[in-house]
Image (cartoon, rainbow, N blue to C red):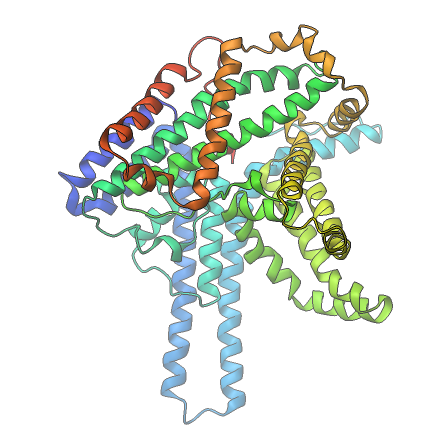
Length: 530
């Protein structure tokens, strides 16, 4: 069931009405039922897998939290009779039991994700080596289901389990409320990757009807649909034409496709997040923001702090920090300091942990080598940038450019171009082809190619290009306004006629100019594939 489908819109509208009227006393139960209905209509097998994750993680967290509570009670009761060494040994024994429960549950659920998402990728690589070494045998691919949103809800479940294990908060005792956290239908499809302590205050509790919150949520949903169906789905036609015909669209058209894809990806992903957060807001549920004007970033590190924020913080908290402070890293740090000096020793854990993060980021995005290479290219650029940081500071101080409008503009453009170049691995989905097209773009691009007639064969009319230009200008304008506070809040302070005109015109734009029908692919949101 796609966010753009009438079924999803109808389900959300019906649930919202019931939420504040007939079933007001059973709000969180209604959301849970709606979430499971959403999964059922999307495919009954989807529901089975999310139920397995929910049950196993809930029980494991209960056991881990129970062991902690039992430890505290036991130590309190036997405090006088136990020596320091005995208390230490007892705590170590309990921690070991907790670790076993955590690891078993972790491996089980990540194993499900790995088997379903990466088995055929593994088989394809085995077949490649069999072919290289002249073997006539080939392994058959498996017809495996990939449950909708499995990467998102698995990561949320894993994060919750690790937080309970670390003692950040006790385990949720109510299975229904925990099930709602894992399955809440707006956010589990494409994020944000929520943390339990961030949503438990508004998810699973009762909410009185608040017109301002509901209207703000509906307005954000409308803005999300505008970005999706007016901009992203329209420009997708041109992107697909360029990418699927690399021999026809070369030179400057590679650059054009690269920039079109950057715009399409941003409008698609942020549009989906707007719809998700907007729907949650209508129910009184607060979800974390997932974007913070990433295309205004001045460097790649800042870009990744602003893009898919919840994913970045998840990888940082559960992969980067555990690896960087682990015992093997401490030993590596010591050995590197001894043989290569303090600087290399200090940087080695950072390099290792960052490489692990970006490998995981790449493979999380897709079971293909282009995603892995994309992730490692991001790692390489980030590390090089960090190493050149002293030079950047010297340059800024020497030439007095830091903070100037001109240099800031240059930094923003540089970051957009760099990230768009890296996204070419996502565009062409083939590593050798990506490098070939990148080289072709650099060597053979000529502005005159835009006037050789191919520009008008991308599947878009002159009216489409005008609409895209207007949409892009509106995106930039709203982003700039958002720097000084909520745009919706500012509109809400305007006269009624102005407010009505803004939202009515946006609604008409979605209704009239949305990319529907023949010639357009009203595709699912990009991140639905995860």
